[in-house]
Length: 145
Image (cartoon, rainbow, N blue to C red; front, side):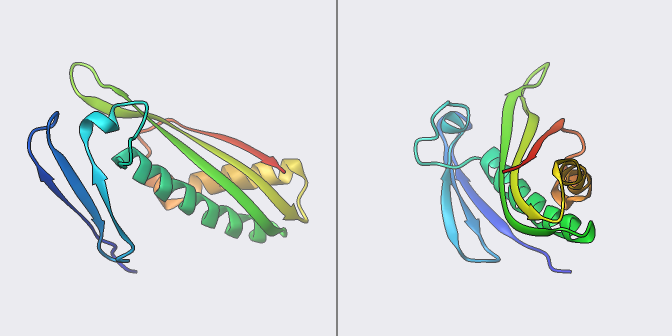
């Protein structure tokens, strides 16, 4: 299986510095990062580790759910997945990811609402990103659209 690579170049202190994240494996982009914007309500044109985790988690979960739905005898037509990753304080000092909320609305043939919810719960447990984030509380809101 492949290994994917990202690279960050950072200059300066935590509060005054900034950096750039490059998605090396795909080459699809470079993104600015800064701690003050990471901790602010508005991102101001920069990304953050939490947003990148949210992107990875929503994509991984969507892929896993499409496989689980098919294994359950359904046909996934559309899966609309959002991952909200929260950053908060970590005592005695520092920060931590305090929670992740996965929200999915699906258009699926061959499964009822209960079957879809069961598939979503199974996908949440089986998603490789969910497995990597086992130290974080991950909640799920799943329903047919």
